[in-house]
Image (cartoon, rainbow, N blue to C red; front, side, top):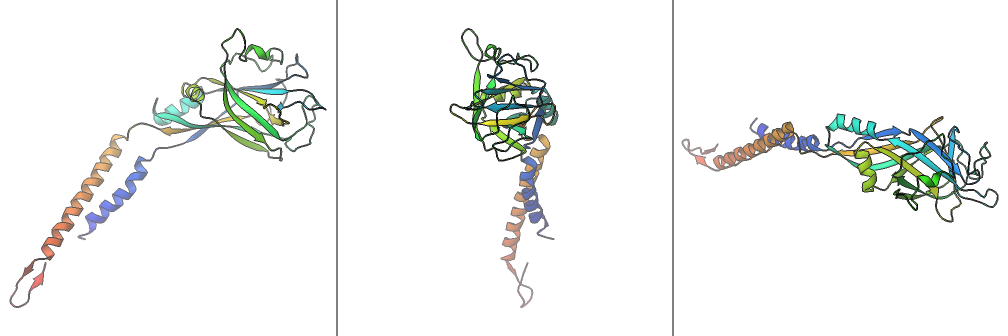
Length: 269
């Protein structure tokens, strides 16, 4: 029993880190609006379709297709505030998940408005202008929300990616942790993601819209406050218990070194 305090202190200190480790949950938000625009049909709106595409022009299909996705981060903010308290969390990573029903190179989607599926590179960016409608935007009206002469629109790069066109039913793309994106999510603002083929790409990337399996914005956060009062009390208790156990062991070692005579039979305490 004399080692009870010592081993209790050791157990306490082993448990302590787990009580102080910050939580890092991931919440997802489904797209609130999504569509694509096509240079091959510059006045057409494709909002009602069940798919959208990022596609580069080819000799057989000489058209470029860009996508737009809108997410409302207010629900994400509410969820994280509910878990940690307002201001007690920080975004650590952001990603997008797309689902594809037609995803193998060489396939031609049933709708002839889409290019053939093909491997290639594309890029995603954060568009600061969220004033667009999936049921009205076209290739010809797209410049009104993109950066250009006479406006203050911005497009912040969030990453360049390679679509392998290998039949994957879903793919998750990790976005750059740009402060503009993190601030928008932290503030519970609307987030518009713009996707387009990179220069010289051959990509034909078809993925689903809200009508089937929509895209998701995935946000991972980390708890940022100082340890709570109970955790601090627990930590101090562990340290005091360990300190007391250490003193007791030293005292026992000192006593055990003393020889006290009892007749001709010395003994140790």
